[in-house]
Amino acid sequence: MNLKNIINFIATKLILLKDEKLYIFFIIISVLPFLFIAFYNHPTDDDFCLAVGVRNLGAINYLKELLYSHTGRYTSVLIIILLNPLSSIANGFFWVKVLAIFIQITTLLCFLFFAYNLLKNYVPYKNILIVSFIVYICFISNIPSISSFFFWFTGTSAYTYGLNFLFLTMAFYILWIKQKKTRWLVVANLCMVLTIGVNEIFIVIIGSLFIGIFILKSYGFKKYSLWITFLIFIICSQLSLSSTGNFTRMNELHPNQSLHDIQWITAGFKTLIMLVNVLLEWISDLKIYLAALLLFLLLDWERVFVRINGMKMCLFMLLTFSMLFGINFLSILAVNDFLPRILNISYFVFLVSFFFLFTFISKIYTTKFPKLYTGSLLKKSMIFLFFALILLSGNSNVWIAYSDLLFKVSDFNKKMNNRYLMIAEGREANLKLILVPPAFDEIYEIPKTLFLSDITTNRFSYPNNCYAEYFCIEEIELEKQYSLPPFHLRSNW
Image 1 (tube, helix red, strand yellow):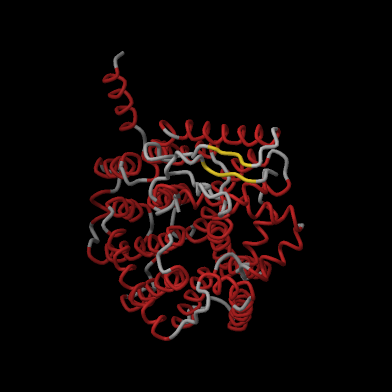
Image 2 (cartoon, one colour):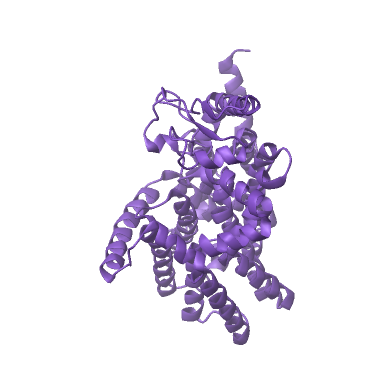
């Protein structure tokens, strides 16, 4: 049997599959490459520095040091102290790979838990998993920096875990509203406290949700419970934002400078312009329209939109834009640019809002749409086209992951393991300076799915000093004959 016959055989079998099995098949092959790539993951820059801090000062003292001199993100700091495998665990490099798998699984499970509690009254149980996976796959295939979202431990502690805690917060609040059981409120408030402590951007997200609730007066529960929850939100937000560590870090980013009114206004205009450009780019992606059409067919939107009118939808979109503006305004204010790892969170907010708006408009103007397409061959064609774009589109993270898996990660893994071997041999030989080749150069790029911010040719610079201290050597730097490629190729931020 030649290749053409094999392809025709597989295609025929796929066409004959029921829709549910077809979804499952494509879902599995869309998620698998990220799990496999985790086995080639390696620690980088901050991972080493933070591990050195724990090793030198001890967990408690280093916790105090970070909160006093670096950040007010108390949950993120706890994750860094407790989960960084380089700090104290034997075979820490192996556990870095395990953690990359762990964060993927926990992100998926937390999102499924949230989606299940949100949709179980509107979707048949057999469809909940399919709907959730369509959103999840659309999200991970399009986010600007999949490398920092899953494969950079320090990045996950400040962003990915926050999104997971946000999923749990909303899921437990939904449970409490529906079941009126106090224990769910307690757990939801605890998850909210943890979410706030991961990153300031989640304060913006939760604060925007509170504004929406207050305006719509859609409490769904007794008012005193809402005010208690809001008070907890205010206290935790104040603790995080007003911490000494935040002021210390801002002084490091902007030494001898104070932010004047004109700087706030300038940052606001820059945020607005850049945000509009980003949104136009995201809206132009065909994949999200196909995903929205599939969701439209799978959900019972008559029940979802029973109490939603045009005015409430306009308010919802205004709050969404304000939320996106607030999230990225913090980035502009701090570093004068949109950081891809912050855009990852922004993209999730955008994606959910887009699906909601798309289906609301579709429900108004295309009442005959479900009758025409449900169970038809065209519906199956839409499934094929959506996952074809997910799997084969050049800008899809899934396609990039498969490309990296086939052509790049093995060589990258060998280069990094050889580096560790050279460091070990240099340490045994008592070399004062250990020279290592870079993991990439003008010809060889690192896998885009993996995160690496490499050492430099300056032995005294960051993160060379962290590398040296972690591996218990005096100095380390890249060999001089290697010239580094442009910065955008040196780091997958």
